[in-house]
Image 1 (cartoon, rainbow, N blue to C red):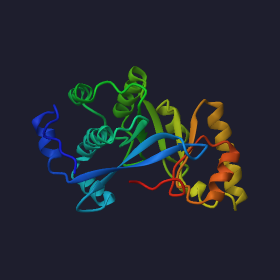
Image 2: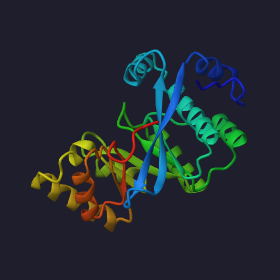
Image 3: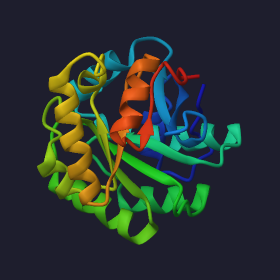
Image 4: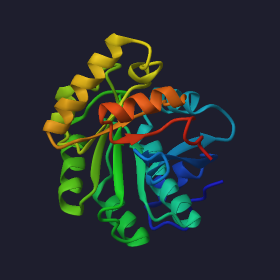
Length: 234
């Protein structure tokens, strides 16, 4: 389980973090050879409820900021303990961002992670322009990439991609599942890959569960891959 007492954070946020009981697992994101790891995505695993239940509970209490801080500080601890050297991808609520003191504490404890960090913008619950601007500033100043999660399934659309000056777009699983069988999905993903590549963005296919899906997506020019076919979270 992740502990937070030793971190250089304010007492109020430390007390809130220490009420959590969570671990982190990682799911690799692979390059198109299916073997070379591009990044490790950190996934929160509460010990007493599902992650969805935890998020819903904290959202109702107006405490999503606590989970935002927990994710970045907890995931980085686990990442360093595992000795990973590839990029680390950390999920972020579009409504939340670090305070100045939290940003200083993160740098003080973990050092600069220039070129190693990816902030993956979730769809939930809403987009705060203050948080968006803070993340764009960090991205620009510290060479931390921004990725848009679940593109094509909800509110994360081309406008969101442009808003964050993102470097990576992750195509939602519903676009990927059985793509080798459905021409409508094939045409849509092909158009999206061409559009994103024209903008200089990398494209991740998530939820790849079959070899036939993987092979077809490689043929479409998708850059990066994540899913049970390649590796499960561990």
